[in-house]
Image (cartoon, rainbow, N blue to C red):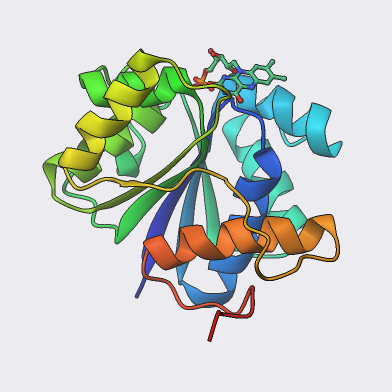
Length: 197
Ligand SMILES: Cc1cc2nc3c(=O)[nH]c(=O)nc-3n(C[C@H](O)[C@H](O)[C@H](O)COP(=O)(O)O)c2cc1C
């Protein structure tokens, strides 16, 4: 029974997180999703999708409808009593896609002030897989130091940087390449792009 946490934080590139969940739902049993407040508005701006409702339950229903799946569980970023806030709740790892510099910094400093940072803190303390897709341009030294700090702790740093050797024809090809590379980093099988041979 494979179970992963996905967090979408307030960086540009919400579409990567949305596509990642779609792909994970094809192969894993459960996805626990947390979306930051800013991420909800970026998702709306960048994709036109409005997931945020008045209650956690209504938001979960809307997200389940979007994916036509009951395998996804939504947890509010303020719900620090959610199962994924505890190390005793077993998951196979966590993806933060995209990851803002603020969330990156909170994780690197152990400042678990919302559910995303807390769940990542749990993944670190329990030695579970943690994949972070930091998005900013350009990076400053603080961003780079935070990435190095986490990388030295075994976190996979997988920024959403597209490649061109697979000769993408459209935007979806580029999105799928990035999401495929993120899934590779998390050790999850997929066929989102043709591999170099
Ligand atoms: C449209 C929009 C795009 C943004 N893009 C980025 C980004 O790419 N990277 C980043 O680090 N912050 C970005 N920000 C700023 C973050 O959303 C902001 O620092 C926020 O506090 C992050 O909070 P969170 O990590 O809890 O979501 C963006 C904000 C907006 C409104």
